[in-house]
Length: 454
Image (tube, rainbow, N blue to C red; front, side, top):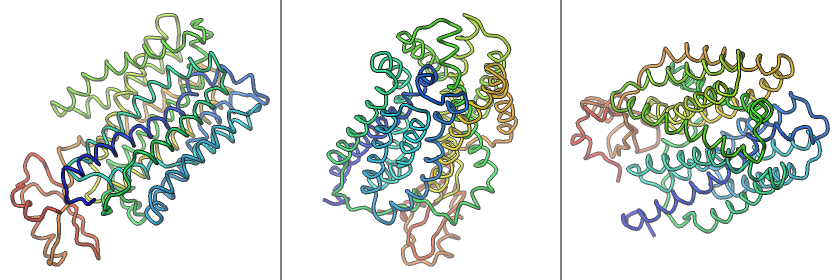
């Protein structure tokens, strides 16, 4: 079985994409299911406090952030499969520990170990190993969709499972999902493929300093950090205000979350389409951040039977839009050949945001109450809005992989950079592949075709 048989490889690509998207979705579903209900069950555990509630929600983000890049680098050396299976087993262990916990300490340890199975970057690298340049974007989009779907399903299944089995039941179900993930990976993810590693998707420590200096990239990394900070801090109190202030029973929380998230999803779709079609992504992006800031401000100022659900709907509309736009924007603006490193930094920022959000949310609730927490989150969002004003709108750019052949790197770079529409090129010493960033609307593709990597 080789990559020369295009029809066979197409079948492998489809199988790899479907199985890895399923695995990724199951894993994230398990991590997300505690968010909509944890605050309601916290008093059942010894040592409970608002601060420890926040730590429990966010601690998985810290271990994810610390281990994401190291495990990705490890997978480059020993292979993807052992790192992914090992990460899933660690995730299952953490779920079992949390399911058996009777104290906040046990919950925190379990959630931290869940996060230590930090295989997100390794899964993405495996997708790149098993797909061609032409189909890789579609595969990544499918996995991104699985994450969004898992978040929505978690908001529904979390309350349903906890109503029947309690909080520990969610962790037992999570452990079962992890086992299913191991089965899916071992049974369905292709292994008999001749792999050529693609530097575009690998993490290179030496590139990190340069990427931090890119103004667009650090603004986007700050954005995903702030977005998940606000989300995690919000879930410190959202379940409580739904249950105690609006009088919604735990049995009925699932359909409330369905309406909020589903309504937010369908509201954001036309905005995202408008922004992409008329190249007004920056306007819709900044408007979404401002919308979330206004929603948090009003929730901190006054809440009621009508105002609270409307503001939460606006909040989730902005969240859904930004969650979809940020990775797409990042892929369009990151320098040629550095997407793997850029995505590693992005994922680390995201998980750090979840950790800081949990801590900040618990501390703020303990010190200043619900109103103070919402107003603090509004301030963070307004700061993000100012930061986002400096973003440059993404252009219609894509990366193409070229073969240097027998030419020197210097001669090849001069030759390719003369082609209309070529914006940037990366050549790596000792390698025969080059990564060129091109403008899809203006590039003279026939001039590049003789150098396409086969």
